Amino acid sequence: MSAKRNLLIGLGVGLVVGILYAPHKGSKTRKLVARRGSELRDGWENLKETLSSVFEKSDEIKDEFIEGVSPNAAFVSAPVQDEWSA
Image 1 (tube, one colour):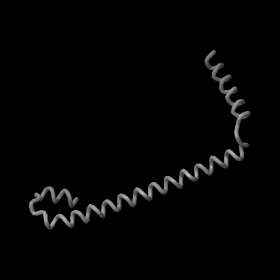
Image 2 (image 1 turned 135 degrees about the horizontal axis):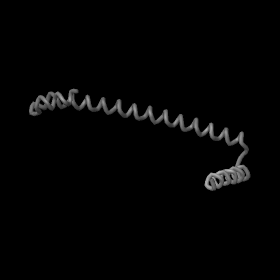
Image 3 (image 1 turned 45 degrees about the vertical axis):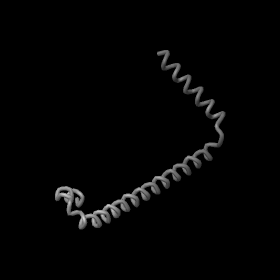
Image 4 (image 1 turned 30 degrees about the vertical axis):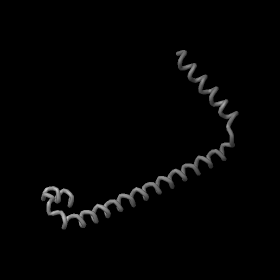
């Protein structure tokens, strides 16, 4: 019972101290949090687009490499060529 009481007292003290030392009003803090969330979402979208374009480019490079090597690679066995083509 004492641990629960101490936890509630600690939460209450923390709440009061947080309110007294808050750097901004609540409305301003909510705006800041919303703006940072929007920036994070935009950054995530940019990262997804960048990775998508990198993977597309790597597929193009792989295909060009395979096309350039395949006619000249008579020494490569058929299973290896099949693996590259997949």
